[in-house]
Amino acid sequence: QVQLVESGGGLVQAGGSLRLSCAASGLTFSPYAMGWFRQALGKEREFVAAIRWTDYSTYYADSVKGRFTISRDNVKNTLYLQMDNLKPEDTAVYYCAVLDWMGPRRLSYEDDYDYWGQGTQVTVSS
Image (tube, rainbow, N blue to C red; front, side, top):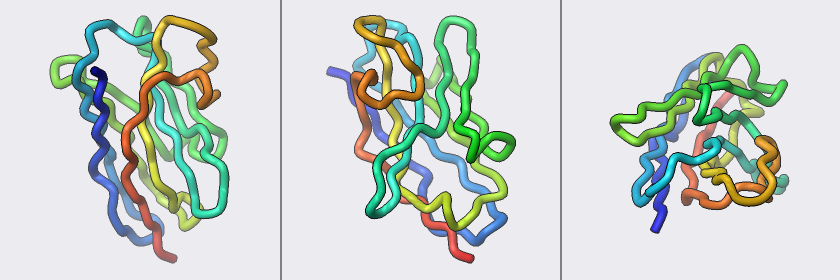
């Protein structure tokens, strides 16, 4: 059974940095991709970033491009999201997710992802 556990969230001032981690267990296959999504209070969940497993290609939402960096460590089976120059509008619960090889594989579509973590809260104060 695939399990994803996020960590690294917290409270930070605007302009600060955080690094989120997502530890994956139970993955008996190499996924097509892994991604980060976020959901602010009262809003729909939105795509943040994704990394494709085959070639390490990365993709970002326009709102975080140039500030966030997605990466992975195959040895530790861990996905990361380095978040720099944080803004109050980045405040949200951040989720990591696995996109496997079955079905549609649209990196920014949450419905295409197959496994999800429980989320970690990021709060950016102004």
